[in-house]
Amino acid sequence: MKKYFFFRSLCWLTVFSTILILSCANLKTKKADNEISVTNWNVQTFFDGNIDGKEYSEFRKSKENWNEEFYEERLKRLCKIISEIDSDIFVMEELENEKILYDISNRLSGNVWFNDKRYDYAAFANEKDNSIGCGIISKHKIDEVKIHALDIRTESEKSPSMRSVMEVTLETASGPVTMYVNHWKSKSGGEEKTEKWRLWQENVLARELSSCKESVSFACGDFNKDISDFNYSEDGELQFAYLTDTECARLKMSSPWKDDDNYGSYYFRGKWEKIDHFFSPTIDLPEPQISLKEFQVVQIPEITNQDGTPNRYELFNHKGYSDHLPITCKVVLKDDQKKS
Figure 1 (cartoon, one colour):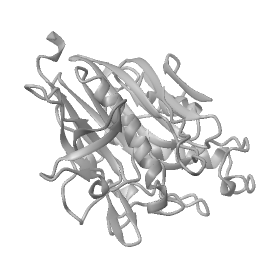
Figure 2 (cartoon, one colour):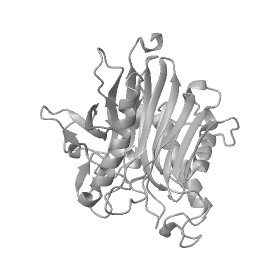
Figure 3 (tube, one colour):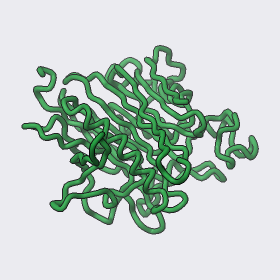
Figure 4 (tube, one colour):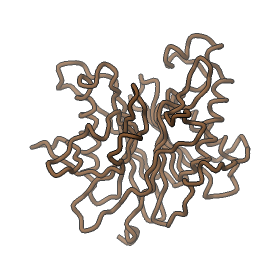
């Protein structure tokens, strides 16, 4: 059973001051009316303080291991980073439930008197039996949320539990924008063996993007797939594959990642990986409806080790943040979109 919700925050419970630090100064740039800033971050197994049996086993061992106090401390640190990055939209993977989004919104309510600082809207989606899902908080109004689930019965083995694609339509000064939030199947069990499930998730995303060519849309999330591992045409164009009634079609995509082995969003076995993404479809129109600008991997000192790798959260000492680094960009809309 699919589960999702979205809300308009009306009650703020916790008030605190937001302090900006110099290490985030390069994230604060003036935006035009046709731009929205977006951050995506896999926040690594972010469970609340209530043990209800769905948590990963290491969180269920004892109350001395995980409890409300440890949750509140981790929540406080997460909210500090969100405030410092200060994007219009903040997307998170690996949240346990919608309660965490309420808690985040309440903790960030120190900016309640400034409309451009408030995250008044949020959305969360998860499958019934999954321990973690995807959530967003937004300064822009959320008009609609849709869930695109997978039901695969054509493979020789049973489909593993896979998270749905969450489609979120946002209201902006330049008109509606549709965002697709993804958390694709992990490589647990072997990269080659699990690749077919990520290809099915690619099919769902590409099919939805291709079906609304006239709308303004982009995708983000943790795809568990390096940018170099996607399909490319002979002339180097990034392509997503999807099935139609008659063929396997291709959708041209754009990514802001650069071909550089010295950076990424995830560090595994001594190597950087670019598995967290922003994508925009490259539709055959006279002018692009959307572009992704000022992309960067966020490397605030608190969330990185001395060598720049992610300062992952460790349950044994309750220190750290996540095994991923946030990525951020500006989504720039075509100037005359609101006239169309």
